[in-house]
Length: 514
Image (cartoon, rainbow, N blue to C red; front, top):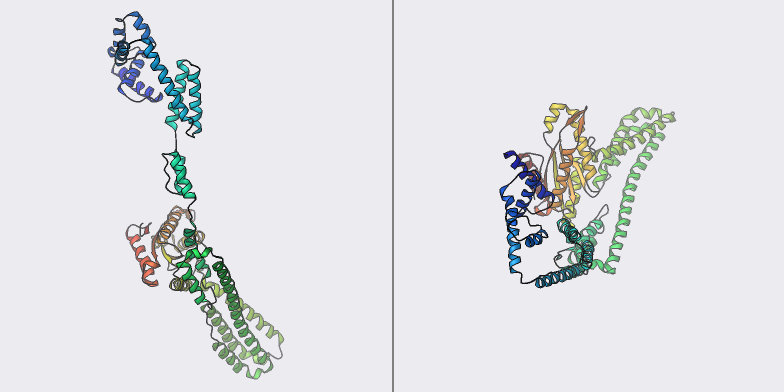
């Protein structure tokens, strides 16, 4: 018997859920008696309605059947209503009044600008107008229940992207939207564009217009709205054109300096051909002339060093060349070919100085040059930047476990990931053995932390394979913003300090935490 009662309880709860009924004592009692009757189980509490009904007048029993009374409370409510009812006419008036009220409510719903609610309200009005049977009205009632249960107004949250909008009142919501859309955001837009314009005007190669740039930078910061004036727009166009012309002239000047060096080498070689008796002394003159050349830009220092090496090679080789130079034109041709090869090697060597051979990111020397450049832009034009140290966790363990070749594969892959996900204006280099430094110009601290965490997550999820074996790799990151520190060196130290804290806190994380 206990098992049967438990089954009735379980089936009753499932039926309540299936019919979307509220779990109240009355609903539960009614469903429980219904399920018990289906299973042929006689429950005394469920027989009380039938017990009392048999004692009533047959006319009252007939009237009861129209109301589908299922429990004692409903029977008492019916009898109280029967006793309190003065006459049938009052009840009919009440029904008509409620029907009219229902119509007015439904008509009001059709005006609320909701397609589904309007359609359902019109269908309900049709049922009331044509005096449909109870089954038809019950069907509409269930549809209203489904509408209320499934109604979803989350689409209104899309309005939050435009600003605060009151969603409880349609008229107020429309008024809020009109106010937001009519708002003039040009000033905020200009404030956003100003740092970008200043960065685009910053010195690249030539430095002959720094005062003009400083002047217009101050004007833009103090009055961002001036961007909307034709006069300032024309001045910016003029500065851009002037910057391009100065850069071209500076490049031509540097190229001319290199051409002059090569011309002097060729001239001295021709003199050697004509006077082989003094070849050794003449090569010394070439070396002396090259050493006297003074380059103003660091990017050309490597070129000077390589050309000096050419002269040293000539000094050694022309000891025996002087006796053969006049009679053997083939030797002259070989020498010219050798110069061409040395020039090609010079270009390769120049590239290697800037790019790490393994990871193909910048070398530490190139990082130092870029740090000087962004620091100069910060000091002159207040263009902020953020540094991000990224260090591979337990890298020594990887080398000890899988070998240095596996470590090189991981370093190369991490370098590839960094090159892929940085912006075009960003700069990444190898700072140490397994440590990388990313320079993020015009980037706030929160944005830099987000970037570092993105790289951390990508590395953690990346499948590092070496000889068909998966190697789990994670990185720790430390971030620091220049404007929050006193100097460039303190910015580096702060980022390195946060990296150390990330290591101490368990690795595979970014410090500081927002």
